[in-house]
Length: 202
Image 1: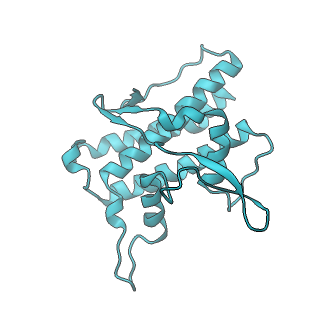
Image 2 (image 1 turned 120 degrees about the vertical axis):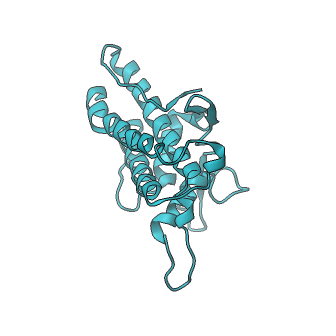
């Protein structure tokens, strides 16, 4: 499974990262550019977050063989499953470009509860917020209504450098912890894995 994951997912992550590196030719990676947005950032933002959704569902199914995903499976459902095995992911930090520390899943925790009809539901364990991952919430806005032609609202500016880098760090972290778990499960330390050029575990 490890070798297949590397070929199907990690190599694709590296290709997306290469495209992010290409944008540095035009906009430097720095805090003062964090609000800069563009069509290139938009394309990458949507691609990376879509891949997070795909990878998240794959990991959830590995954690729980009974987990089934469909078009209604959202981040709460697959996130809850992942947190049963990788509960510390919310505390893990990623280093970007050698000097910027990020915590992409900070506060990311779901809990089960029963609704009024006694059905099991999921909700953020942190009740002080409706969504504990700001960059994911912004992605949903960009995805569902980039430009409101009638309402005159715009979410295009959310496809900025800050949100894009946060999303990248989340995808990197998800894949990193899963690859590490597969290595241990298969006792496989010989397979060659290309390193990220931008991200590392802090």
